[in-house]
Amino acid sequence: MSTPARKPAKNEPSTSNFIRQIVEADLASNKHAKIRTRFPPEPNGYLHFGHAKSICLNFGLAQAYGGACNLRFDDTNPEKEEQEYVDSIIDTVQWLGFHWGSNLHFASDYFDFMYKAAEYLVTSGHAYVDSQSAEEMRASRGTLTSGGGDSQYRSRTPEENLRLLREMRDGKHPDGSHVLRAKIDMASPNINMRDPTIYRIKRATHHRTADKWCIYPMYAYAHPIEDAVEKVTHSLCTLEFEDQRPFYDWLLERLAEGGLLERPLPQQIEFARLNLTYVLLSKRKLIQLVEEGHVDGWDDPRMPTLAGARRRGYTPEGFRRFAERIGVSKAHQMIDFSILEDCMREHLNEIAPRRMAVLDPVKLVIENYPEGRQELMDVPNHPQKPDWGRRQVPFSRELWIEREDFQDPPSKGYFRLFPGNNVRLRYGYVVKCTGYDKATDAVRCTYYEDSKSGTPGADKYKVKGNVHWVSVKHAHAAEVRLYDRLFKIEHPEGIEDLNPESKKVTTAQLEPALKDTLPEERLQFERHGYFVYDQSGFGRTVTLRDSWAK
Ligand code: ATP
Ligand code: MG
Image 1 (cartoon, rainbow, N blue to C red):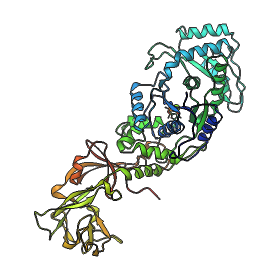
Image 2: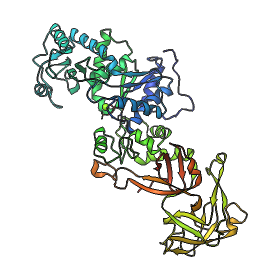
Image 3: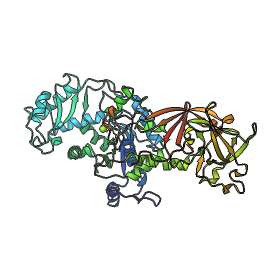
Image 4: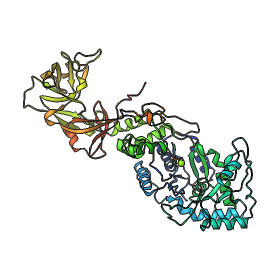
């Protein structure tokens, strides 16, 4: 707790936002000597692109102001939570580049404290056991426009409530027979303040506490306590929780009054959740995609999950840039998917070596190039990074080129291979197309011996087309998966909007240097985009340009 408050360093993003302003004011006024945020996933699913925003925001803020960020599993609901999700979340947050040190917590570790707090609320007259049926409770809750009515059990004495609460805890009552409610105001205009339920009876085995408890705290009760126990200073959540804030504050005030919590208490701050075009981020809909087999699991490279993104070749740095670029605000925002793709492209452009790969191969035979001869072409690994060096790519009489790089007759404005036209074979010679031989399915051409790239006079050949190639004799074949957006419309609603073209598998011909690719290595295939390797082949992360732009 002794790290002094500080201003963000010079190299940190200057983009201010309303949350940074609150943090800076709290540090300036010495409300907090050090800030603490938290990322609080419920371990009931895989993390998605929306979570990346929250992770970058919480961990990023702690980093920028010399504070700490906790990773806390909000595991208070025993029914849907699993260790598998805990493991995957840990893995993913680390992959994004964030560290929590010793600040890994489970909300279920506070069950004892939460229960003790509940007894305190009961004895101090701030909570009561309600024994209405679920229908009665619903009916007496009122509506958005009219207040609710008091339960007949609201006037139970603290002693009676304490006895009942203990019996609930001890398993003396069946599921659903009673609940514990905060005693606030049934006439409040805010429905969340109308005596919200804070504990329910539920016989369910919890992934960490097993069968120790048959009562479980409700989210609205558990979450503020988790924050306060961990001494979180700024509790960032999405806008849907705005109406919960009065209860958040009410609860923590009561517990602080009672000496159960220390001040300063955490402050809840809401921001707009991430919404992306061409994507669905609802857990329920993502589960449907997996369960009905529309995708190959949670980590399918087309899924908007972070596990999927990793297999797709998206980079942690790309996500951090994206989070910074979209910023945070209170206004609902719909972010164009191309912004995320641009962030990935920009980063991949900086880190991906260039290679040549022919995805839809047809042969090109150079009629006047001697059989058996071969040359090594000198090719840069990255056009803007001379220090990445060059490699020698073998060239010979028969090459693989893209089928679409030949047309006969050529369409209007087509300047690649067609009979009579000159094009440059990248880093190699200029060739003149002489035709296409149907029998051998090969495009034919002749080359100009004095046109070799990088040799004196080679640039006297003025050509519009520049075509990549791979020497047939030296090429190796590999599976290449071409991914595209999973949904075909901007605002998808469900599986009916899936893009049937979101995955195409081809057998490509690759230059020799690609033989040594390592798993998760990222490369640019010239003219095709950025690709990532796994044992079974290459997958396209993103094209070089936005092909969806209108
Ligand atoms: P559920 O469907 O269960 O509500 P959830 O997506 O809210 O799921 P949580 O595990 O509760 O999942 O979320 C963990 C954190 O991530 C929360 O703080 C939540 O506010 C934040 N979060 C979730 N979705 C988004 C989103 N689309 N944009 C920004 N933050 C998000
Ligand atoms: Mg949630």
